[in-house]
Length: 168
Image (cartoon, rainbow, N blue to C red; front, side, top):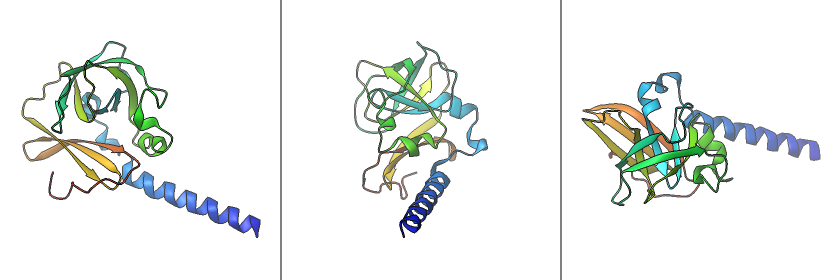
């Protein structure tokens, strides 16, 4: 009987992991030049599909909410702990790492609750940034005209009101 319970638990865990990874992994076509230049920020944490950032690299912040924050951030180091990077907290780390983003610890005078960041020097002329909430997550978008050119995903591990329908 105990063996059947363990087998069932392992099956359920594998099924949940497969379902979650299907929802948030980044396909190869999403890993492009834009994905290396744009990321999302919460507090002192930057998530971006770029493993090659260095200490001192600067980013421009783009507002996606009504919250005021600094206009730029600076990379301090790779984030390794949940103290540095809230998306790496125990209750959300696994899902956030499924996106293949690299997490960095950043500094600014006034850290944002949520923002999109672009590497300094990357032209964001004509790009509009948006964020919305869906099923325990924040989804970030960048549009050039009507075309979506980038998307970010932050699993917050909490129920949030659905705002994504019709907001893109």
